[in-house]
Image (cartoon, rainbow, N blue to C red; front, top):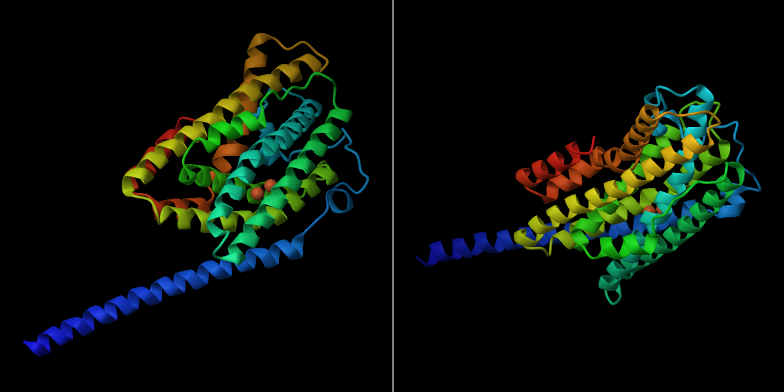
Length: 331
Ligand SMILES: [Fe+2]
Ligand SMILES: [Fe+2]
């Protein structure tokens, strides 16, 4: 009897030791992730004027977004010159959408940094750098918006208030905001890959915007993942289930912004393209803008393999189906 008990104790002891080992290994991997992001952040650090803009201006003989992002082929009634104009309008909207999402991303990162104030100083430094970079990116995109405004016709509008959107987004749970944030920060990687396609008509300055933004966003995606998994570990299954619905609601809210901007950009195109556009064509152009924006800002991130991998490791199959069903309505 005593022998049986001691074997059981040994087995339980070794099981506890194994669990402790796994926890310790997770902790080491987590610390290495934060440290790696700091090293990379220091290595790639860039300056808006010295590295990205370098005294250049936009030239309207070039496309601003590559065809793979602007989905130029979908604008079936337009000439090649008009498709180039569409890519320039989308380029200005690209700058504005990033300026918008980086407002709430930065606020969430600063809020999450609170968890590390008195603990892991490596994690704290990684998040402080993340925040600093997002402030710089917002400044870059404000510059790009103004510089594109200098070379395109008057009348462009982007009427969404970044602070108002941030208030709504930050009203949702951290889990949901981090899911949306990882989606966004992963798609900048795909956008960069699209922009390096050999395309002699693409603006060298806009190419550099993609390149330099991607360099710092790669670290952000790593940190989003670390913070999302860390935060997820403290949630009950009920809270996580509600957060899945909140994530779906946030994607719907992003889509609402994209729908309004697609209409605004199509109106701007029709008013400034120099020829008459009838109602049917105007509707087709607005639909093509919306398809491109949904691809750029929702699906290209949601379909990213890393996003799918992290998301599916945190949720049940049924929750995954709920998300897929919601995304499928945005086509
Ligand atoms: Fe950014
Ligand atoms: Fe970022």
